[in-house]
Image 1 (cartoon, helix red, strand yellow):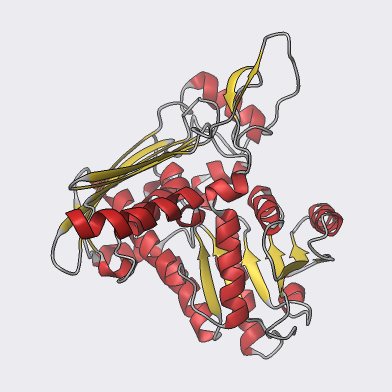
Image 2 (tube, rainbow, N blue to C red; image 1 turned 180 degrees about the horizontal axis):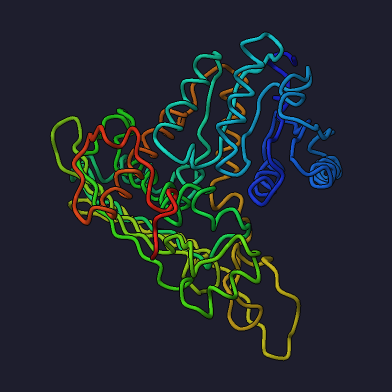
Length: 415
């Protein structure tokens, strides 16, 4: 293990889309090296290791199992980024290795969502704590430079003069995920609500929380939600999806929701009522991924739209090229007037997130976002799913959520 003053040596579990976003972020993170990667595909992990080394973020070595990765003397911390249905098994492998004395890790970080159900999320937390590991929940939106800066100004300038904020509105929309497993409810754990509203509820809770008291000073008291499959169950689009993703993704028979709306009510430590309104969609056809956040108080408002980047490019119909995402994530067009995000990893929060986790693990400090936050987010998401299933508001706390599995994950949702 490297000395506390040296770089944190990180192993990645996963080599897909989100792992590459983190690679972009680590270009701007000091005191860290990506020295190992595990993927079930030998070709993918070898290619990823080569890319890490070529970008001088390593040198990186591919490993053929989670166990061999975490038991390596070269690894100080692990970033879990595999598909949702693999994360608990990966955490169990980490726990076994640490408890048996075969691994000497300082910390473990896990991508959103922490788990598919509240029971799984609590087990992720239990395993991390039982192994004595520092743990971080990788929720990038609360580390977004715009969100961090906007929240700091509101709470420093507006709140002392006019009082605390009472309403946060958050949304995330794009045209659909990249990989087949995201579209399969039993594997992913849900549809767009689990995949993307995990961002929205935590960003809203973060914006409304007093920086001096933390997010735990807000107590959720109710959840109300509606879900629907608006686009991808239409026969034409269901067939397009099947052709693109393979026969496992059949939205004529086993759809997931592609739209979700949720409202969460909280009370703060002084009994004041606060609200978070969330909206997420896999059916948004615009330039690309769009994040919108608002924070409202008695005499002020904060607004952020990720597509208002300040930079745009116009390409006429005479300019033709292959499809890609070189302008913005989930890009939907190659011509016309297009917004350009000059540094997505920074704008979305990956750079600040990874920098924060690295320094916390190096110094033995508790991150601002831990597995405990991941559990809290999962509980709110399960309450929203339960509300949508019942067609009524769910009061919190609700003991039934401890064993609850959403209809999409049960294979019972029909759109």
